[in-house]
Length: 276
Image 1 (tube, rainbow, N blue to C red):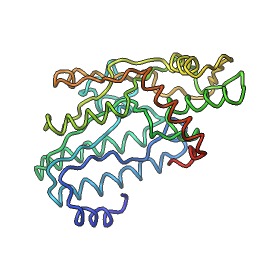
Image 2 (image 1 turned 90 degrees about the horizontal axis):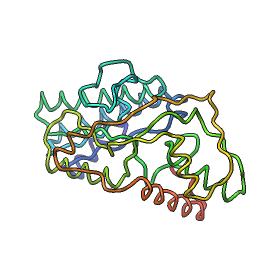
Image 3 (image 1 turned 90 degrees about the vertical axis):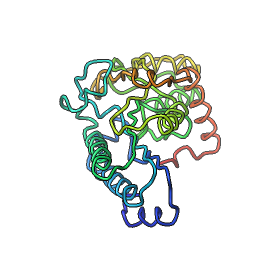
């Protein structure tokens, strides 16, 4: 998808009418800090190729998915859409955030110049079955599930986690996000950012303890404060979505259980490390 010629060929052959651009190079703090050049380059390349093709082939509507990391590090909480570009970004994911901000602006300008119909949902942290469990590159919730499930199965009585645990994150199940983007494609027609989330957050410490309890881990949890926490709080104001009539349905407990089951199934097959 980084190849504009390949993308153009796909559009020419398949003639899509509606495009959901969810493809991106993503990962947690470690991946973002380790590969900042890849994060900005790959995501810009994907966006450039797909958004251009959407305009060239005159699709009916584009859904460009961003991320809550586009907002400033020192944002007021909960984060409103108008806080975008009002302050410096979180350094640990700046490359990814800059690419996504560029994508948002590109969509807006293509709408302005070419009349391309588009929406730009900004989701909070997404999790659920299908996520990566690669500890070097995965998101926090799936990484914690893997660590605690493995610890229980290996009989370990100690786990070391990154940071202090005080940072707070908001989590939305991937199935709720899927419902949200289809809802917006049907009911909304504005290229400006619209937040999509659960509307409440949880500290990483509380999340770790919750997952530990759900998988039966009774050992000790240690926090490595030499590792970064990332943005200390990142909770979205979802009043715009609420006013449109949308609300998340899957509870965090129910969602975590689905991830635990997904990881155990993948592990039983021996292919959980194969995911990108």
